Amino acid sequence: MSKRPENEDELQEREAIGVIRASRFVRKYSHSHNVITIDTIRKIHREIFKDAWSEIAGRFRDENLEITASKHLPPHHSEVSKQMILINQELSARIQSLKEAEGTLMDIAKVSVEVANEKVERIVDTAAWIHHQITFIHPFREGNGRTARLSANLILERYGLVGISIRMEKENKNRYRAALAQADTMGDIEPLKAVIYDGIIERYRGVSMKYYSKKQN
Picture: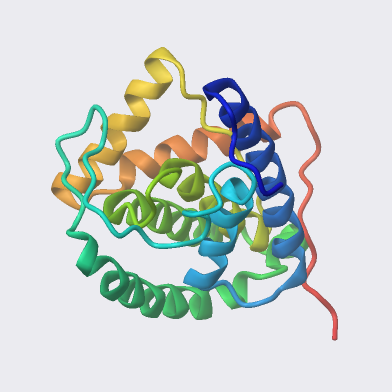
């Protein structure tokens, strides 16, 4: 689509379709075993906005922002690229550490509960970390929360868990915002990890555990 949305309803519809498209991108990318980098996160954002707001799709912001219902002030736009480079370096180190967990959960019956729990903890920790880094820096003009949640799902799905849907209504929304605020002010991502754990438990409740296997060469 080349034309901009003509009204708010059309904009929201295109963004909703974009989130579905980005979710499919995440699912496919998680199975591809291609490297996960900040460029991957930019691609997720582009999938959300390429038909709704092409000017910002996949591009770091060039203006300063304030976050609704948050005391956190994202860094100056001139610092975004530099900070995202630093995040990319940390992400690379974390991904390298997680590689040994790739496929392990498929053989969960062959490992101890302690080993399985430790690997799940590392996966969720990295998912919560990248989630918070994106919301903290707010690198994009719009859609940072959606991009953060999908990026966290990419980590979860790549390393054997399932993507989750964080409910954004009433008490759930307040809990989510409080978790992000705790991470912003105290550097404590444990409440955000708890939100993710609850999402995983909800997805698995009443169904057989299913994990993605490690790609065979």
